[in-house]
Image (spheres, rainbow, N blue to C red):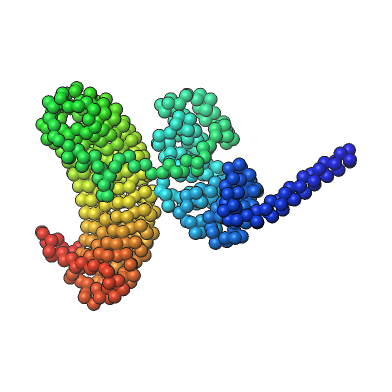
Length: 580
C-alpha cells in the first residue's frame, strides 16, 4: 500500500517537474522572439486555446512595453480563461490598470463585471453595471445583468423590478420564459406572494404553458430558494453590443426624415389610388378632403409611409383596421385630424415605427398605445386639450423621440423613465410643472427641451443623463440648478433664459464642452470672469440692462473668442419683462 502511494506521489512530482521545465524552455524561446513574432505567437495561442502560452507572451510584452495598458486587458483575459476563480485578484488588478486609462472601454468594463459576478462579488458587479450604463446607456442587457446580480445577492424586491422591465422587451420564447420565471421567483422570495401567484396565473397570456406545479408550490408556501437552479441564467454580457436601437432616420433636431420625404411627394386624391403603382413606398393624401379610404388602399403592400393629414376622416376605427393590412407600413402622419375620440384599434398597427398626430384635437391617448412595441417616434404636439400621457407609455421600449410640445401636458410622468431608448424629448410650450426623478434613467438622451413651462425645480438625477447635448429650460420659474448639472460633460447647448436666477449658477463653470449659453432675462448681477476658462464657449447671451461693459471685458480677457450677445427684454414684442 505504501509503495503504491509513494509511486503516485513520485509520478505527480515528475509531472510538475516536466511542466516546470517546459515553462522555462517556453519562456526562453519567447524571450528570443521579435515583437511581431511575439504578437503572432500570442494570436495563435489564443486561437488554439493555449492560454498559459498566451499569458507568457503577454507577460513578455509587458516587460518590453510596461506603458501599453492594452496588454493588461490581454493578461486579464488569459487569466480568466485559465481559472476565473483562482486568478480573481490578479484579473481584477490587471483589468483595473487597463480601465484607469480606458474608462469607456465596453470590453474592459464587461470583463470586470463578469469576473466580479463569477466570483460572487455581486455588490461590486452592480457598481460596474452602473459604470457601463453611465457610458453606454440603459439597455435590456444591463437590466438583466443587474437583475441576475440582485437575485443572487438576495435583493429579490429590486430584482423583480429589473426582470419586469426586461420582460417588456421582445425576446425569443425560451429567453422570455427564463426572465418571466425569475420575475415570479423574485416576487415570491421578496414576500410578494400575491404578485407571484398573479404572474403564474397569466403564463398562458404570455404564450407560455400553464404551470400548475409552480402555482401549487406558491399557494402552499413551498417554493424552495434552490428551485431557481432548474432554469439557467442567460449571460447578458455576451450580447452587450446590442445597445440603443434607432428605429427611424432623423435629422439633427430629431425630426423624422419620413415627414420631409412625404411633404415633397406629389399630392394625390382618393380617386387616384386606382391608377397608382401598387409598389410605391410613399403616399401623400394630405389635403385631399378624404372622408374615408377605399379598400383600394390594401393593394399597396410595400407602402412604408403615408400622410393623411388635414382630411375629414370620421371613422378612425375603420381606418386603423384598413392600415393594419399593410404589412410594411412604418410611418403614419395624421396631423390636423379630429381625433377627439381615439379608438383602441390603433393597437393593430403593430409594425408602426412613427406616428405623428399634431394638432388633432386629442383629449387623451388610449392605453392601447402601449401595444405599439415597435414605435420609435410619437408626436402629439399642439394638442392643448390633452392633460397627461397614459401609464402604458412605459411599454414603448423602442421609443426614441417623444414630442408633446404645445400640448396641455402638466407633467412628464414617472413611467417616462422606463423608455430607456429615448434620445429626444420635446415638451416646450406646454403646461409641465414637474420633472420626474426617473428622468435620470434616460441615459441615452441627447436633446431635452422643457422651455416655456411652469417648472420650478430640476431634479438631481438630471446629472445622470451624461450623453445630454442640448438642454433647454428657458422661460420657467427656476431659481437654482442642481449640483449634478456639472456632470453633463457632453452638454454643448444650455438655454436658461427668462427664469428666476438671482445669482450666477457656478455649476455651469464645470461644463467644459459648453458652446452656447443663454443667461439673459434673469436677475443675475454679474458673470464671473472664470466663465472665460470654458475654451469651447463661443456664444454667451446676457442682460443688456444688468451686465456691465467691465464685466464683459473681464470675460473676454480670458477667452477673446466668446461672442457676447446683449439681450434686452424690452425689445420683445408684447413687452416681456424679467421675472422678479
